Length: 384
Image 1 (spheres, rainbow, N blue to C red):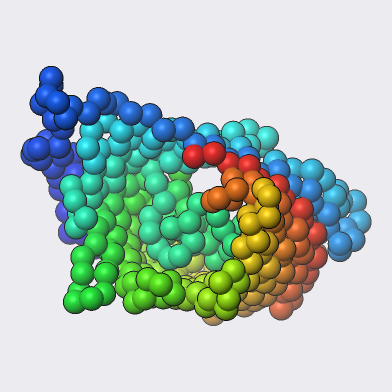
Image 2 (image 1 turned 180 degrees about the horizontal axis):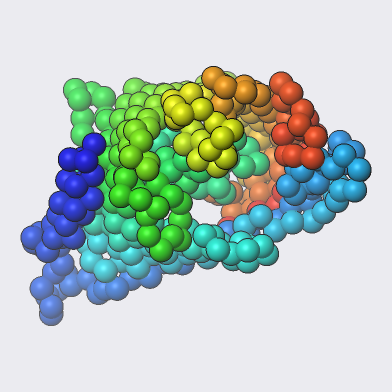
């Protein structure tokens, strides 16, 4: 593991810096007829506002914290995201991406606000590089921004695997690309990250986390894709791992009616939980603390194309997740039925309404580990 840390954290990052300067033929000569002027700028933004009402007495609508004394704020308006982003194209295949969420200022902004901040260089279809703060590819959800998700928000397992450095915004470097295996297009990603989240001054230790993803496009017409994810790493001189599988398929029922489905499962070491516990309250073996979960998300989409209304959608995600299934197991099952209206192409405008049902194997008073029913109305507007 020490060899891997030294090799990837020094040599690979060094190569990522140097490789763009060895490329040629990317920009036309000054004064030529085909000259393309750089830089080029592209702005994008997203607003997501919500009304939350907890249907379970004594639970905060925003945090899910249960109050045994019943003193909770059970309904509220909330701004979930107010994102502004800028992509600056510096040359053919070379750009800088910045994305910030200003809604994070409503609480302590430490470790928040700045989301994407990376440089990307794409040589060709087969290979490209990213360096900075980005979302490593480790499943379906990591490939989709929040504004085109088929449910209200990311899954519980996405959040927990993000706390453990495999998903969400991380600082590091990545190599990605694609190739054809016979008639099957295959995409790959390999990432090396610090693993302690975004907007950090430095890594928490010398250990790094290495993850990879291989995705097979089995049928483009029906969106049949199969993904394999795996990762190893080291935290405070202790080895960790994570694995995952995902699958998508769409069924065209009529010309305007389509059923879109996603299935994803993950398992890995929960070192975030392990090191958050007092030393005298945990075992001496980090492998005793593993998380495991999966979800199934069907989405029925009817493209109505009536005036400004583009489509009507109905979805219901079922998720099972246990953040420590070996010791003190307390599995969480979540059902999220939802109805949504899309205005304009690409969810330029969207209104969603539904209920999130959380059921735990065991309730823990005065914590967020408590059965919950949350009613949500969410509106979003985006430009890109």
